[in-house]
Image (cartoon, rainbow, N blue to C red; front, side, top):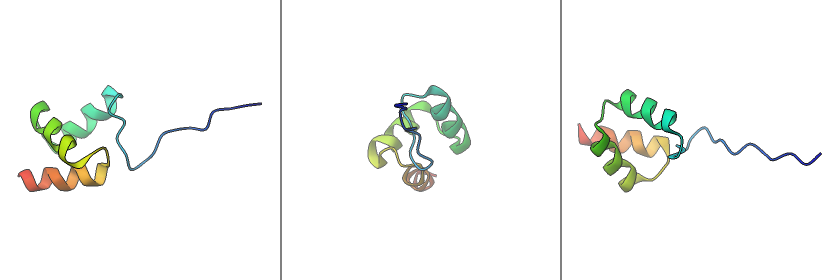
Length: 57
């Protein structure tokens, strides 16, 4: 019984999952371009993305 361990983390954003990206982007009320720049600066950590998005507003 070799099972793969789940790879989902609660505090990081899976950038390949379109649903996660869409939900977080709408929650933060950012455009696609703004969201991309925030992720480029802060990485995939949800807390860091929220903090960086707050500095934009």
